[in-house]
Image (cartoon, rainbow, N blue to C red; front, side, top):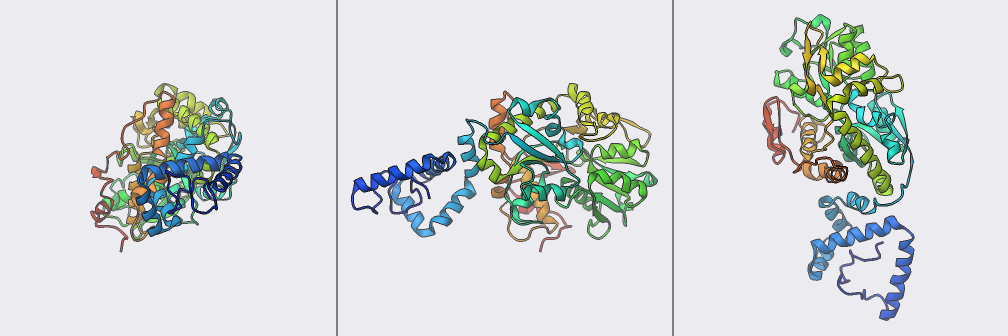
Length: 458
């Protein structure tokens, strides 16, 4: 219940009478009592203020507001407004100037280079600089990451970029609204094949192959599906896709359980290092600048801990800025390759981060953008992910591409914090890009899906 009664169709916003008291003095006394109680709950009071301001902006005329509320009802009105205005984010932003609500935090991560910013933020002191005591919890696989966030065992987490979208929609789990603060990394994946397949560089020769991917709702899975389909292979019929935790991919390749994988680094490079695999193609050659992993938390955490969330935002953005600078890559490799984090040979991690690497085919490559750490959660990235979820049958029917993405990908917040930190924040929200040479127009997602001959839509 809001003290402003913004959703009461019979109460003018510009006048104080609500028509429910015998006298104006009784009305005033009741509002003072409610205001006093509400003031003891700063979070609720801030929510009222933001909600009131939003409703005033949308309905400057009381008559229009009252007609709208009578026509649709309070609950429908709140849902409609929430669909176009990120209320939770606005409320969090309004409250974030103040003491940290929670200083001791548990953050989950998978041992991959994609998580470099959130990992390095611990030993290099980025969290502590924001007043946070962070415990990084190494987690075995993505299903466990999801479950620990749902069960509130982790306060925030390393995610695959598609995971918060799927979780927020209730795809693959119950509905659990999640929010992406930043993209952890762009690029940083590859298709790696077993050394016995060096003579099979044409994907048309891969019929019957077994491929590992880290999770159903992953960029790895969606990019591999896209790549296979563009070469005429049905990813559900012509090959087998096996969900495999990233740390187990190289062992499965060595044992012959799989023919290859589209996975995160450092495991593509580790397969080369161990002489069991070779890099067929970097994921940046499929889509240069694609998102891979993300950093985020639940909508509930954002709402209940706005100041802490802002501090986390700042810590990870500062770490990402350092990770983007090529001169720091060797240092970062040294920091994150230790047993507590990636537990990999430092030379393997350094090859990934510097882009100077052996490809397993006898060549030495120099690709500085093999992995990068642009933190901007572009809304067009989220829309593309949703098109692939629909293309391959994970979601059915109409999809609110724009509405879902803009709730989950906190682009406005990211830009705000970047500016506060003196970092250059880009303009726009729906950046265009190409996947295997085909431009994606985020304004026409269904047309994009329908342009493919191979899909699972009805």
